Image 1: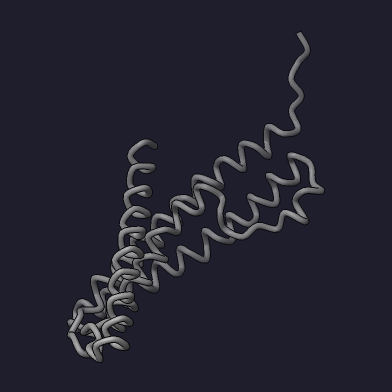
Image 2 (image 1 turned 90 degrees about the vertical axis):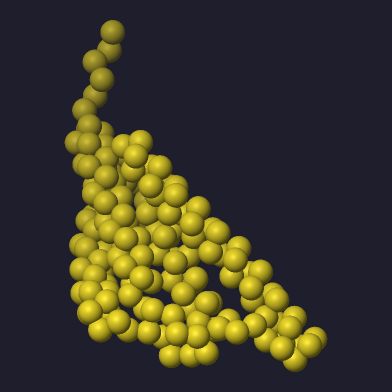
Length: 166
């Protein structure tokens, strides 16, 4: 479990570095465009690439921290078993959706790699590494959903069990 937490923290740190690089690069691009009439080359392509990395690499970390959207207005009225059941249902849906997303992006990444697909634009940037990174992020989110399904199942099954009084 330690290695898993290390990996998802490394993924989110990579995403944070991408956000920082993107912020600096686009600031220089805007300043160069309006102050010196010299924009940075490939700003659009870099922004497209970095946004994919930023989003997909942070999915699993956000799920581990339970920072994705939740329906607290519904779950706050439920007991421990009800919350666990609601979470279990949501995690199962999330798991199945992201397994499908991972599989489909994996197919696209493989096809992109075979055809050596590149982005159109000022600079030729290959698409396939970005797509494989999206697969990686989606895969780890799917793994996180499995972990959450197991935790919610245990919580659901143990919520109705009363502790014996000593």
